[in-house]
Amino acid sequence: MKRAQFKIQQMIFVLIGVTLFIVIAGLFALSISLSGIRESAAQLDEENAMLLAIKIANSPEFSCGNSFGTRKLNCVDFDKVFALKDKKEYESYWGREITNIEIRKIFPAYEEDVLCEKNTYPDCNVIRIISNSVSGKTAQNSPFVSLCRKQSSGEETSNVCEIGIIMISSKGVNDNE
Amino acid sequence: MNKGAQEEMIGFALIVVLISVILLVFISISLNNSETKEIESYKVESFLQALLSYTTSCEKNFGNLEIDELIRSCSKQEFCENGKESCRVLEETLEEILSKSWKIENSPIQSYNFTIKNFGKESLQISGGSSGTFCKGALTSLDSNIHIYLKVCEN
Image 1 (cartoon, each protein chain N blue to C red):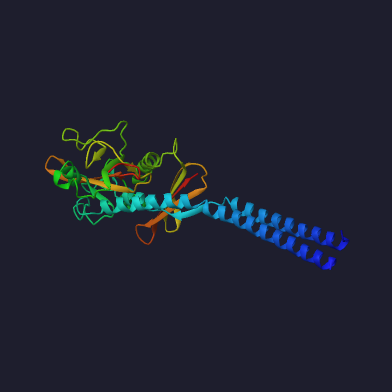
Image 2 (cartoon, rainbow over the protein chains, first blue to last red; image 1 turned 90 degrees about the horizontal axis):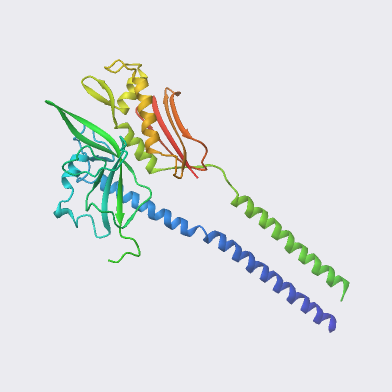
């Protein structure tokens, strides 16, 4: 009987040991797999913001259409956007979540930011559609766009296309509505 | 205590230690995988599209050529109306645009590599910075013979 009891005790210790080992290994594996979830969520947020910027850049209000030769993708008509700026009718057009749309000329580069106003256009590099102040959260990765406009020299009109980025600012999670 | 039982306990402990070591080695190998991963990036692709439409200073046929037209002009070894080689204007313009658009100083970007291939041969290459573990690339073609590739690497 003593031998049998000893064997049972032995088996219990083995089972407890194996269970503990499996639990610890499982917790370890789980902590490694879950550590990437926050990064994935942040990456998804950035991708969504970029897709939204692309959608806005290709919308009829921004898009070049066929005005600058053959239809270009991600082409923003700078003249059209400037005309749209500060239009009260479009204040709520972009959705409640979007606090501002900024188009920034990347090349030719400017040493200092020059906001596009009536007295500076087209020699300016920053145009803000909804308001001149920046609020909300802006995505880190913004898509590049062609910024095209018409340029007159004497009797001739030519197309000038430059390189810019379109940045969408939206209400953050902690912002008060 | 029974010697057999002691041997069994030691054997079990050895197996647990062996499996733990193997598991740790496997995990450390998978976590230390620092191969450069290259993925498609819409940001890089959108840059290439915007770049090809950029209006350059090279005048030809009473208008300024865009980058895609300048690349074709360069492939035919043509000249701009001011006498400058179209290839030279192309190289200078691209160098300036790439350095201003993909700034390496004080940014996560570590390097960029821009290549134009004409009939399979590299006709122009512009690069900046060095290394970078996480790379994004995009490829576009003007026609069946001219291919443009841009790779941007970050940390």
